[in-house]
Image (cartoon, rainbow, N blue to C red; front, side):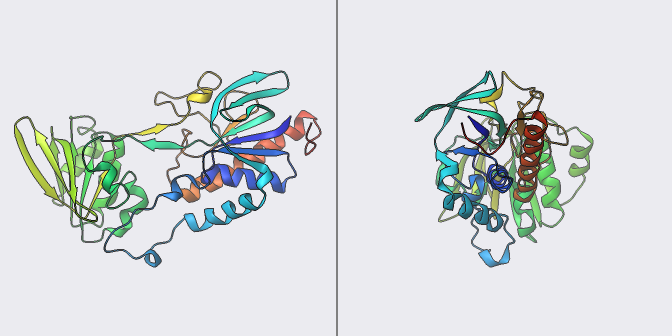
Length: 307
């Protein structure tokens, strides 16, 4: 019986595990990799690495510590989570069942894919799924954003502050008639292509443009980068029957990263709190670990003593 199992090895999960170790908990991190989304960095022909402040530099410190403490993590997939007599039973693909008094779910979220030619080829080489993470790099540049919801509009608004030209490729009317959408339509630097769908990403070493189609009309748009901002899909399925989710399947948490289920905490992009930034996920992971520690202490069970 572990005190704590952390599911997910991204920024939130790594930080939670490190803090749990520092608190003397018997903790096990379960993840397919270490680093999560920080293993994927947008590459651009006009940006050198030293020009960007990266949260992954902080995450790498936590990663090295967890790699050194190899007994606290296993590279495996979680198949299911079920309530047990004294906590939760976690079934792993390769190691069977492990049990813990409490859990931290830090499984993250993934961007909705276009599933068109060129997407995989140029992923993170001029094509990305988080404009808010990289908007500051596009001063006086032309950028393409794909999507028709709030995520896409927020990204256009962020980019339009500094970019020379932003093209929004919106497959449907979506949320374009919202107050934000109407304000963006009034900006000279923003172009709306409503009813167009992306059909191919074009480029050389990097993505350089997008081919779009509207009924029978096809056209190509050139840009310095392409951001796919259709939706973020949280990886919350393994606890969907245990904790309360919002309408988009994010895990609902309070200010202490507690879920609706006793002993289950959550942090990072899988939750309904504002994240999507590495440094925010790091803070949320630390907070979740401290909350889990207090939960265990208040439960009156001896911690740090594996059964």
